[in-house]
Length: 115
Length: 116
Image 1 (cartoon, helix red, strand yellow):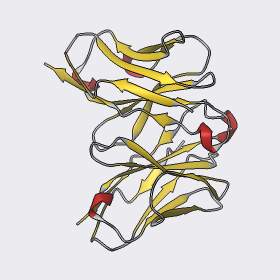
Image 2 (image 1 turned 90 degrees about the horizontal axis):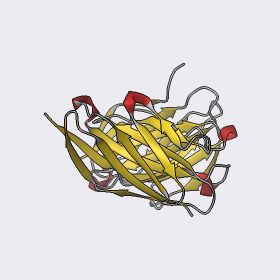
Image 3 (image 1 turned 120 degrees about the vertical axis):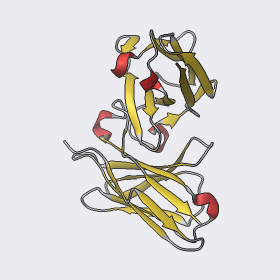
């Protein structure tokens, strides 16, 4: 069974540009979570999507947005990139029917570097 | 609300020594508890989980954790450290269910270093 896949692995952008990150969940998982892991700041919750809807967002500005497609894959968009957006962005999926008891399955992440 | 506190941002042990990574949680309901490991430039991998069955939980790579309700703790241990155990470890808690309040809350992480 394929795990959570993220693309691209690395992304280098210039300040002010837009970045698009992609995530495909495990087959059968409808919930997708996005986290930002900046150096020294731990895992910061960004967004939660389920059944195509945004269910919850963390304390991030509106320039962080995303969507979930009918096949449950998801896209994270970061507009007007700033240097401090440089981080590892992690996507995770889970089967909501288990009520969170199984934990999340994480992808390997996208390393975004803003120069 | 749930929260997790990991005591010690960095732990260093000698190869072959006991590994002990501490985690305390706060939860208003019986929690689900997890330990994840992250190797450099990789995602998080689930080590083990507690879901109200046995209080002593065995995970992968020889790790185990004990749920102690009276101490609100879920410490991670391994009897004998290997060089390959060097990584970042995250403790996490969830209340379960399906709501914005049920998402997993992660601790700040503990970096484990192994001395030869």
